[in-house]
Length: 448
Ligand SMILES: NC(=O)c1ccc[n+]([C@@H]2O[C@H](COP(=O)([O-])OP(=O)(O)OC[C@H]3O[C@@H](n4cnc5c(N)ncnc54)[C@H](O)[C@@H]3O)[C@@H](O)[C@H]2O)c1
Figure 1 (cartoon, rainbow, N blue to C red):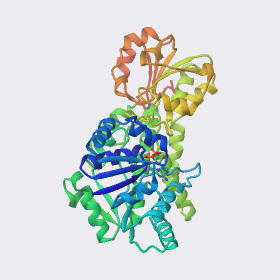
Figure 2 (tube, protein in one colour):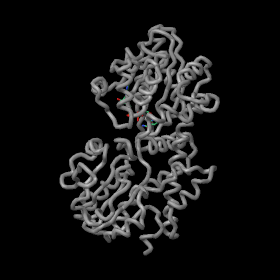
Figure 3 (cartoon, rainbow, N blue to C red):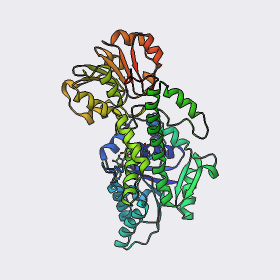
Figure 4 (tube, rainbow, N blue to C red):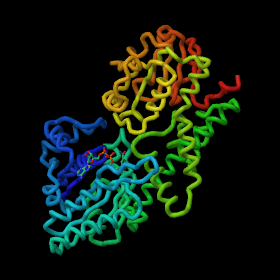
């Protein structure tokens, strides 16, 4: 099938490459001409395991093409996907300008019937707005093409976008138009094993809300576990044991139960904020989500609080080795990353940081800017340790998983590990002579 995709970001690019791999003829467009130019020259704009090879294979096979021209993309596909960014401001108001810009260009250029599919995460009612913008453009130029608008939210996880794209656990199709259902069912046929189970057809508003409800639930699980971690700390229990104990219950399941340094990323915080804002505007406050946000906000300061406790408030002039900057492993995405909060708190307290991340250094540098002596960007985890007083782990990259604790103990000036992802075995670190602080790991440092 011929497919146009507007937006070559974390979602659009992976989706385009997976469709192309399945044999669809995909044209992926982006308003950022530099990004498209780079892609055509084989330069990836983002880090996502397996994606570079998939893009290269699609280009070589001719099933994947790129353009910066909205008109060409508006004319190419039978299905046209809107996969552009939908940021939310601090209050949760979602900026739909990019979505509407795509709708306008399709309405201005399209020369025949089409199915437009909203994949961007956007508030309930956005598909109706997209439809109104499209119809406005069509009627302005006296065109009578039938352009249907469906919703198809995305549930992939950054860091495993290719795997999730190839094998989605479910595909939500928001439309009641039989022709649109048929087209989307055919498009996704190579990706689902059991269409009856995995293709969930519903009305557009329910599909839009499904995406927000999913992210709100995931955020809720994380904040719940962070709150339980506080209980564990004070009760002398280990949250990691509790996690295993409850995750084995099929009614609960093991996912998204990790206590840690707080959730981040481009989606959870933004989508929880947006959902809360929309509900507030409709006159019903979402009390659970207010608490979820408050717990997460506090949790992002947790590692710093542990350090302040350990150093008895004397953090000025300390040098902290920081392992991990990205909001999660296997991505270079720094949007809303908990590491940014820790960095700011450390700098405000007069500390210096020696940071290393396998993929997110460039994005982190672009966000935090020039900080003089406040930060040294290191080429390896080992370099970050040299001359540091203590180590903080914020992202659980695989390469941080099996450290040589004896070496860390010999290298750090006052050996201490602040483990924001509960990656390490406390007893092992302590046996090497390291003071170990995890999140909810059995003893309350504040009660000692
Ligand atoms: N990142 C995720 O893990 C994830 C998961 C599920 C859903 N989503 C949602 O998917 C959408 C895209 O997210 P993302 O992370 O890929 O964003 P992104 O910022 O990585 O990419 C968006 C791309 O759209 C391009 N763009 C903006 N306006 C355009 C236009 N008028 N025409 C063509 N291209 C345009 C931008 O230049 C950018 O390259 C968002 O609504 C997001 O909430 C993201």
